[in-house]
Length: 73
Image 1 (cartoon, rainbow, N blue to C red):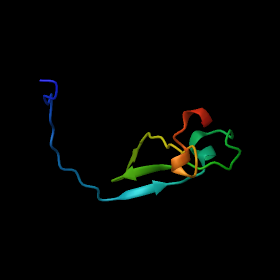
Image 2: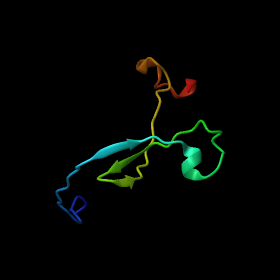
Image 3: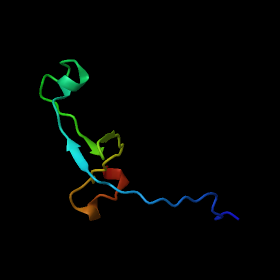
Image 4: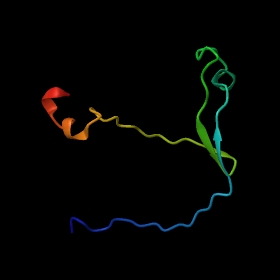
C-alpha cells in the first residue's frame, strides 16, 4: 500500500492568451528602490496575472565530468 494513489483530478484547461509583462518596476511598486532600471517579469494568462516560483541550478563546472567531486566544490 505504499504506492497507493491518494487522490486524482483530471481537468481540461485552455489558454487563449499568454502575455509576458515587462514594465518599469518603480511604477508598479510605487517606489524608486529599483533606481528606475528594474523591470517586472511575469505572465498574464487570459488577462490574469500569474505568479510562478522556481529556481535555477547553475552547474558547478562547465565540464560536467569535473563537477561531481564534492572536495572541489
